[in-house]
Image (tube, rainbow, N blue to C red):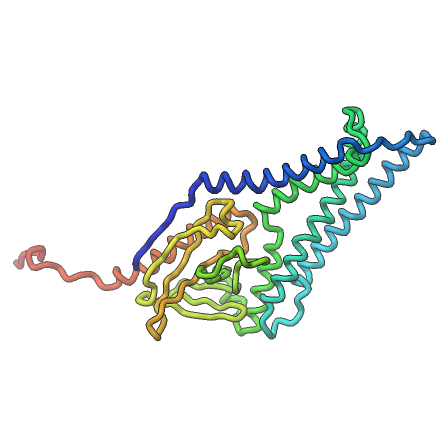
Length: 313
């Protein structure tokens, strides 16, 4: 088996983070600059109106925060509103998760932002921030850190685990068999990830490295790879994947098919809460596949040369 690896450039990783964070900060600064001359609203006639407004903002913020938490727990409990696992589910799940990744963080950000308004708006007014800017700026202050955190942390791990377990159970995989498996997604590296609006995985399931084969069972796909079929293990980063933010070089298996063609299979370890853990899981998987393939060479030791045989007594 040939092994090739293209190290991920740390400069590219830094530039990618700089681009993403810089883009968020740029639009925040641009929006604040456009709102700098907003007229200051007239002072409140009643002295207690400020207290009432603060209480109102806390209630509204609490409502949005509770709505975000409730929607998240509903998504986890219902496996992202997926109920029938007797047929393929991943294609529909990708669209639903795409919407969930917008709705849940937005609700939480609004909740935190409204609560921050109670404390930050008077402070911003003391520094001369006028008009609606003093009210809306805390909302963006809450939104940006949550967006950055969402780049590194995946809150959808419980959903992915339940989706894989339920779908494979419907396909006949027992829970005891799944305990020895590695949760895995696969994709075609020949297709650009930039053209995919949702997840870049084409299928998700479980992978076993045991005996003489690597076995994969997924939502729609399944295959087995013998040692002699694995021609190359390639490590290459996918610029269209968020895993690039952690400097992860994906595993690409080059597998010879019975008809003589070569299929490329990109592996995506699933079920990890952070991109850092995902990178370590990818490195560990590459080492496990290398050891598995090397075991074939150690199975039958070479013959002992005549000159090295012990003398006869």
